[in-house]
Image (cartoon, rainbow, N blue to C red; front, top):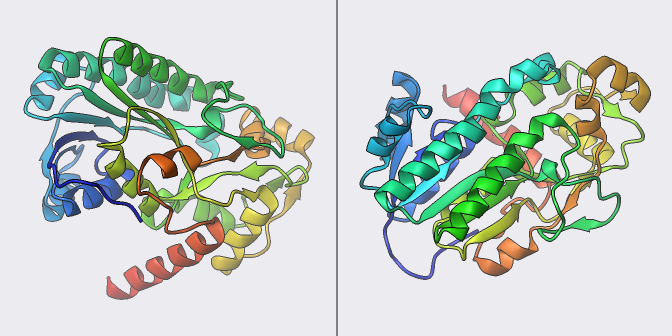
Length: 319
């Protein structure tokens, strides 16, 4: 649930518009009367955006002059373009190169374009996984980032760019999302792995995992258009332990119970990616909830996974 206090319409330049979060954000933004200029990388993606009421655009985010032409006429830039490797590729350092480039070079080009055009508000997709291990304690935005794996370093670098943009007078809004899940591409790889019993519980499974349903993420992005500039965690209300989360997902998917693997063995098999599964991050959304009318429709992954499976079943019947 979310909303705005006034009917002001905005024109938002949205990268990653055809991704799972981008589509969710596009729906919410348009439902509130905003205009969305969405970056699409394919004709199919452009058609989806058109059907939602957005204006699709194709642009090379690594071409600063092209980016400046593309953002002209907008009053908000929202950078949600990512290239997150899935499956075994996630354990390979070189598989993260394009994602890092989108976060670093893409962010720099978009900020330069925004400043050249005079766009003040810039919304950036960051990640709560960049926090340190907090054990059983709650983590809020006052906790300094301390990535546990190198694939998160680019998010920290991009956040520094947003901070510098704010120091120069820009309205920087950094959203640190929990682990996003939901129907379709938001969880395709995860669902396949759980159903094949290839997504084990690492270690004792008592570490906290902070999640957010893709639909709730979309609402948060829409609210970020007018929120007080700053940094906000976007997660659900009730983080679950890894053991609880995996059991919940498996039950919702009617999949076999997940296996358990000692951390030492997982570290050998998956490298630093094993630490991502084992880290404990009990992240609080209190700051964003108090700054906006946003509240997650799905308070925990228990509710969210049940809804995800139901939505997927309806979609398969309709197709």
